[in-house]
Length: 124
Image (cartoon, rainbow, N blue to C red; front, side):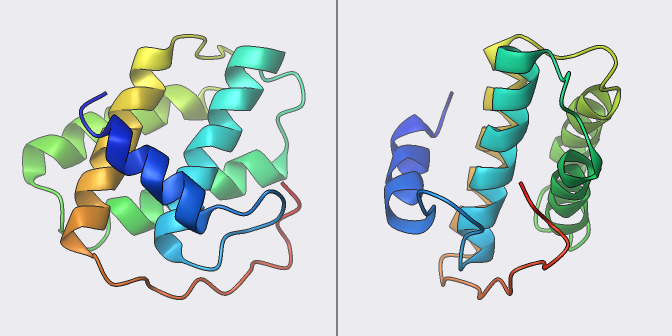
């Protein structure tokens, strides 16, 4: 992982011990780690609408605004597509680590915390 130390600092400063993060940056990291946990620890056996909402949040935030370059967007979309195929759980850290690196690049381009209103329909 290219941005391990930055991701660790973001986790400590912006991801609560439970519930959704108050910032988009923190919620992006929380989303990846929730998906990693479900895939690696549970083999996606508990996959539900909440996991899909986390995946959709990653897609809509990281791919929509053009912050990431075209090559990064293609690679990220491919990795997110792998996660979307929840019947074939991703049990390797490398895919999740690549997603974290892309989201950290997005966060570096957006250093000012962006408020994240909680999604009342998300219970993950």
